[in-house]
Length: 213
Image (cartoon, rainbow, N blue to C red; front, side, top):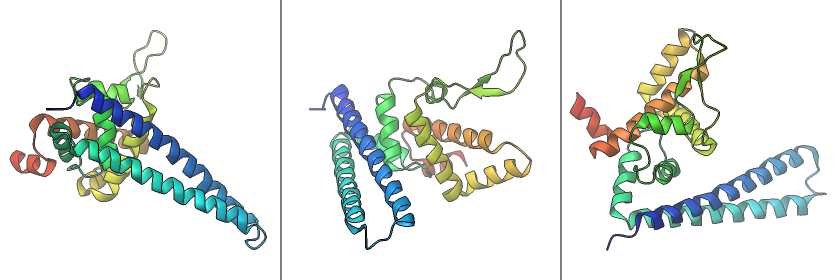
């Protein structure tokens, strides 16, 4: 019998939330340790360094354990498993990013279009109005899910580094004098559109390209 959708998504969301807190704690200790090693003598403060290193290692193990548990949940659910497979076929989208999208779209039932999800993420531009004027640059909403927006930003950077198409697009626009952040935001939206497209079509991104060609 297929597991209850809400139950599975709630489980994933709770585990992901705990993971995010531990990731932040680990990052704090990493920063602190790096700064202390730069100003303190290692032999005099070895206990300080060793304890923090031990905590960082423990956090890393716990993070991996939570990630594996989330993947177990996904792999035991045929629908989630297929969604995950399709999403990670897009270069720049990693496994945790894919899970986060699945969680906040509630298996792609919460948002009918990628544009509505982009608006929720705070990446969809809207016309900026000043007084009675409606002219001016387009901006993005500040009322956004910052966790997803931050994740999409990392995905966009990864896509620029590892996806030839995205890399050339970014290079071409910036060489034309276009704003780097606005270009990065366009790439974020391209990724969102592709995520929704592969899930809707039921074909991985590479297969989609072959179909379109």
